Image (cartoon, rainbow, N blue to C red; front, top):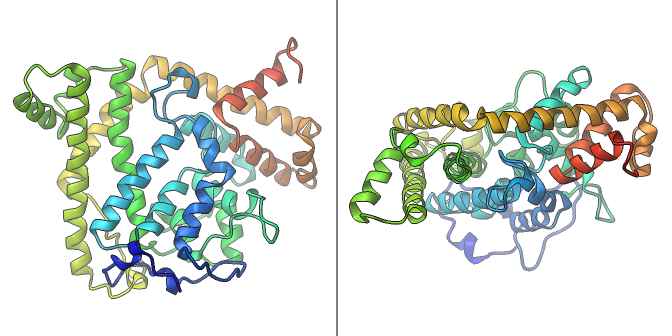
Amino acid sequence: MVRTSAEAKMRAIYASDPNQTRGRLFDEGGSAHRSAFQRDRDRIIHSSGFRRLKHKTQVFVEHEGDYFRTRLTHSIEVGQVARTISGALGLNQDLTEAVALAHDLGHTPFGHTGEDALDECMANYGGFDHNAQALKIITSLERHYADFDGLNLTWETLEGIAKHNGPVTGDLPFALEEYSNRHDLELGTFASAEAQVAAIADDIAYNNHDLDDGLRAGLFNVDDIRALPIVGECFAEVDAKYPNLDPQRRRHEALRRVFGVMVEDVLETSRALLETSGAQSAQNIRDLDHPVIQFSAEIFADLKQIRAFLFENMYRHWTVRRMRRKAAQIVVDIFEIFMNDAGMLPPEWQAAAVGDETNRARVIADYIAGMTDRFALQEHAKLTDPNLKS
């Protein structure tokens, strides 16, 4: 039984205890130096899928600028915010961080644009969902260990990755249903409080850094966002305290305050929800009919206004729309080429793409989803440009 300094600080009765884990699909025994959740986090960091996030876009295509967020930098930021909130609430920081770092592993190249295009391609074969794909990567597609496919993570980490955004009901994505039939993740319930923290940390991170990236890219300016709730107040506070501050420092000081407002609101709101929940265990959190990690209604309404502004002025900006159109076409072209001739896949993928059309489509989707932006662009050029060698 490993007791780390981080676990020694874990004080909430409803926090997840690594010594009470439901275990791994394949039993490995314990570690002398790391808790079960620390091992999960470390395996995620060392995975191929995590490294590939370096060259997967958030909003901008990976090569468009060195300072824009990628899926990797975003995931690291989410992990940091999640650890902070988790520790302040007395939860298990290692489990929270593991879920946070893995939450975007299933993203395609070109962000949500690539996901939407691949989902459309897969409409007749069960669709495509990045959360389900993340689970497939860590339970099957990562193949480094001698004794099993995947990373063989604990039930708690897998549950958190599968349903950190809430219960998964109705028509299940294929990858979720397939794995849960082997290792029941109880998809119809809420996840642990730690996983819920990871989900809200994702919201906090992208609300803040999309403002920063949009300003940096010149898609809008400070005057455009000063009318937004939270943002305007934070700029006013900085201007009052630091008159004539240079624009870069001014932007940073204001946006770090926006970050702080969101974190403090989550802490205050969630403490109240946890206290009134009556939960005496991590399982009690799962059995509730509502999440316990939330923004207040007031801040949530403010964030909806910020997201509406970003949607109109960033995600639908004409330069972003041009790239989105090209990115979607690249994904569709690659999918259709391989569906028409799976013999053009690399040998190891050809071997997996045998059988019926549905299996072939799912293997091709796995191959495309694993691509970085750069690799997808290169692969598309090799497949379509007669002047390039394959």
